[in-house]
Structures are given as structure tokens and as C-alpha cells.
Length: 441
Image (tube, rainbow, N blue to C red; front, top):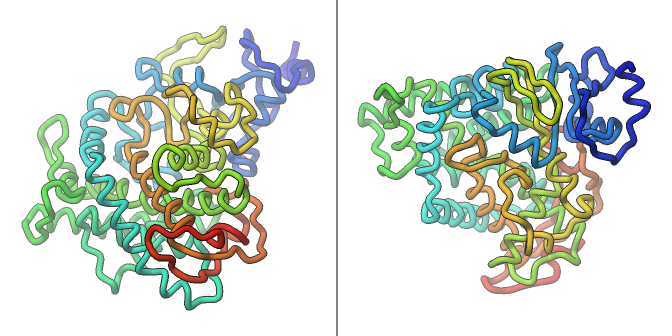
């Protein structure tokens, strides 16, 4: 039976343990993935009736898979490695070369411990307070404008706050340029042509900037607090006891700044969910109901589409052969929006009341353990800043949403509403107030 015969016989929606690895039938699927970055794997899985299949991406044979069991396999360090797995265009823009995302084993654990040391409850709460303070200061200027594009307006707020929190010097004269460069790393990394070139240039410029900051810190010209991200990264030593080269340290410092500014995507989705699903607006912007709301935003809305690794050795899983060195792609968003989630296409924050604490079922920013696996160490920051957005948008900022195209553009990376979510600010409400106008159009 040929691969095309298998495709015709497969029934959408039915899952089975594949004794044969289906193929998607294309010579190369890179264009299909770029056209539908959040849906290509999910739709192909539905077509083939299997949670894994083989394709070619950038002409390299690739096993694509989704689901909690696939995620648990993907994070098995005895079977998979990250070094050299991520395509060069991604390393040259979004992630940087030599950073924690491309490390394995002891080198990864040491570098990951550096990041996790920054994620204490006190430190995360301090960053949340800084973001809230900067946001409230910006409201007066927002109110003077007819409309504000939330996606762009929130980015300098996040950049100022995280630089202050990390002890990275950022003058008002360079704020616009530095913010624009950091945004380009995640907003233009997947763009074609000129957009991707801009992201590469922004990466080089940002690394030069922060490498100089690292060197000035090591020579004593800049004296950050010991617990700050700048001090921790500048003073970190690898397994051989050596300080990180300034460029690598700059990559890791950008791995603090960039993901924090990228929370602007999730903040737009918080506003979008408040507008689209008013029946689910939490009674309180604090406590468990707020956590459930922002977690459902992270599950429901597309953020990071997939991760890539390579097999360390040959093995079989569920009857399928994984050759040594095979590229494997894990569908993050597809895992969050498919079985075993009940009614995954519905926005239901209450699903998190009794949701199992499964490290591989809910993986918007990667799966597994924060300390041991390649799960985003900044996840606590993401949650804290989304809760700040929820609180301000439901209790401190009276605004309305003018008519616009709010359809989510799932062909874009990162996905956003077509309009990137415009708001008109009416007024700043006193602390503790709650006004229906905050989330109504």
C-alpha cells in the first residue's frame, strides 16, 4: 500500500497507534508550514488519523507530532538533543546563537539554573509592579490620542520595566531604537525577505549593545544589584569555571528582555478575550479566577507554534522507527487545542478548576519541568504580567473597542488580531473601582 493509499484510507478525527509512519504526500512541506504555522500539523494529523507523521521541512526528513504523549517523548533527554536542531534563520533572529535553548545535559542544567535564580516570587512580583507603574504612567498620553494600537503601545512599557528590573541601562534617547530592535527579534523572525533581514540586523545590534553592557559590568563601570539579571548573567560561569564570552552573555541577557517584551502578544490576547468572551470576564482580577482566565488565554490563543529537536539515537515508539539524527517537530499549539482537552475550540476558563497538573498536556511555552527540561523559565513572568493586564483592563482603565477587524491572523508569526487591537481610552479609574466600560465596545 502506498503512502497516498494510507492518506485516502485515514479517517479524520480517529486516533490510532500507527504501525506505519504516514507521510503528508508533499515533496517538501516548508511552504505549507509557513502558510499555516499553527494549523499545518494539526490539520495533517486530522487528515491522516494519527498524532504523528513524516514530512520534509527545509528538505530535511522530519517527524511531526502532537499530544501529551508525544510531548513527554520529546522531552526525554536520553532520546533527544537540542544542539544544532533549531534552523539557522531562527537562531540568527529569535533565539541567538549559543544560548540556553541550544544546550544539552549538564551545560543546559547549569545555564537553566542561572535563569531560574531570577524567578523567585519576590523578583517576579517586583517586575509586575514595575510594569503596572509604567502602564499607569502611560495612560494620560494614551487618553490624548483618538485610538491606541495596544500591541505597539504596550511594548515600550514592557521594555522600560524589564530593563529597570534587570538593571540594564536604558536612556530615554535610545529607548525607541532598543525597543524596536528587541521587538523585531520575535515579530519579524519568521518574516520573509526584508522583514527577516531587519530581524537579523536587530539581533546583531542588540547583541553588540548588551555585550558592551556586560563588559562594563565586569570592569566595574556599571554596578548592578547582585540579584539583578545583569549581575547574574555577567557573573555566571560555565562548567569549566569560565565566565561566558560577552557575546554569549549578551544572548542570554536578551533571553531575559526579549521574552518579557513578547508578552505584549499575550496582553493583546487578554484584551481580545475580554472583548470577545464578556461572559467569561472574571469576577475578580485577583486570585484563582484570574489565574484560570489567563491560563485559558494561553491555551486557546496561538503563541509559539512548535519546537524542534533531533534524536540522539535510533529507537522505536508506538511501532514507529525514529532513526538517529532525525529532526522531530512538536506541535505546541496543536497539543493545547486537541484531545484530551474537552471541547478544545471553546473558551472556557473554568476548565482549569479541575485540570490535571500534567507537565506535558498544557505546553504553550514548552513542556516538562522548568529546572530540568527545555521549558521556558520565564513562564512565571508571563503569568504575572498577564494578570497585571487583566487587572488594569477590568478595573483601572475605562476604554472602548472601536469597530475593527479582530479576526486572529493565524498565518502571522506571532499570531495577532488583524487590526493588532485598537482601543480608545476614556479615563483612568480610581484604584479599586470597576466599570463595565472597561471591556465593552
